[in-house]
Image (cartoon, rainbow, N blue to C red; front, side):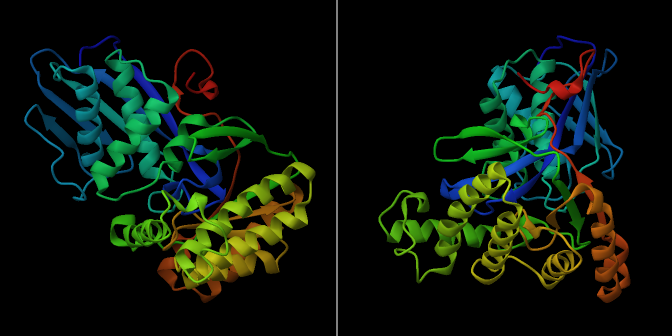
Length: 376
């Protein structure tokens, strides 16, 4: 990894998924968007005489990570954020076909809340791969970057995740959601209307996918496809999966993604709310990935006037997403949060918080040009 620049600065946004969860690893459909909270990576060369090492520090994550030429990412699922740095360095090194031969300093900064279901780990993986690739003059397309970051995240966490988070982070567009077809790996921007605000409420219930039943859910979905003799549930009908709740969720969720896009484009906002409600119910009752806290937040948001609400991401904790008219969005978010805090434990209530997000450009270098332009 030879230095091409004195300094490289990269950013990668987190994402919120509007609809289409637990569909990406079944070659299904989803509608996420890249959000205005991101992970930033700065790479600079260290002074001469410190060859063969990478030193990484972070404003948000504890500890300093030092990697030598003998360090290997062999502890998949191990503890510590440094495993992402190790995995990213190894991957870029392997793509370059020559070893790290100089010392560099990496600084990590992130505004994506960790453990919230907004893809903080994917933003970190994308930013690390992008920054290290640019620093070593390794060209990567959007697709190559997303897939490389996906490899890094799987190796670092040991979780067999799908590709949605990385594709959303890399392909984000200002004021657009992203309709992703995972069978074709096709990303289609969908214009987001100005009169529809997006609210996110963090439940305060942190979750780590490696400690959840995520891998078990994926196995159930893949087993269902095999039992039907199909490559994936994307090809299954509702009748075929009627008696299997895991598969029933995936097939019906794919239908809801298309219905949501249609309602969005036609301005049928009441329909958006109904579709989000059905999605949350499916995740709660069929896929069993919701929690009492997420259910309460969804109910509170609807009660105080949100157009629609649902859990977002893999579930097991994290965040909910809601839609509202812009002039009432802040009021709705704060009232729903206040109701939630009344019934929550002090620790959880103190950690819960609400904010609005908007769609931004995907990952890319930060330089003299506007960093909203993203990766070309």
